[in-house]
Image (cartoon, rainbow, N blue to C red; front, side, top):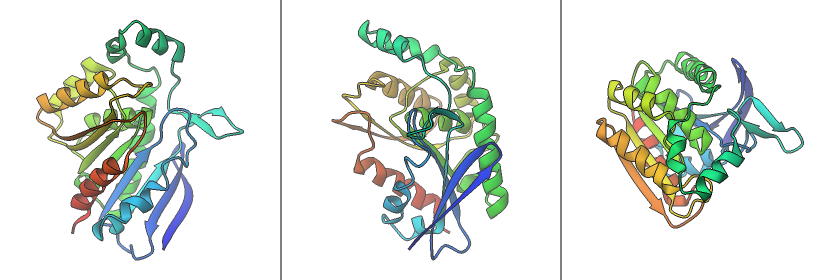
Length: 242
């Protein structure tokens, strides 16, 4: 049986999911949704991940909702605003790598917001950073990557579903400074929203700075296939093992 609780941590509304047998969590997993999605978008993945093994059932799963409300009727939310027209024009001209130099104005504040959630979880469950897994989908994975590279200690794992390389100069500097991270990354080769080149460049940047990346490419669009969920489940299981 899965238990769900809604609460607020700092500035972010969150949903916590755990298995009924989880009394003293051995790990915490924080997953951030993508641009335009509701705060509940990834919540069902907790159940799918917990079905991959017993260790995964001894983790708590936290799903923060982005604070920017795009459409209250459909609970469409964002971590920061995106110039969709500019991205479309870059894609049409084949200049998508220009996005790699972009540093969203709100990214530093979102980093603070998500770090507060992470620190709350560590305190609540008495967990070291090595027992934390952060990640997300699309824009949420970019935020998670940014936080993982800036955090003063290395997390147990980082999950990048359909992410891309942004803020390239700063991320490269931080990747060189951060202790080795275990990362699972996936991306569709026909992704019409975030082209595959950005994902490949992100993987190469992380690997060249001593991080361990398990990488999956799949013949699909902007999505999370089952093999990517299983890969994330394996990472979470390894972190949650006591």
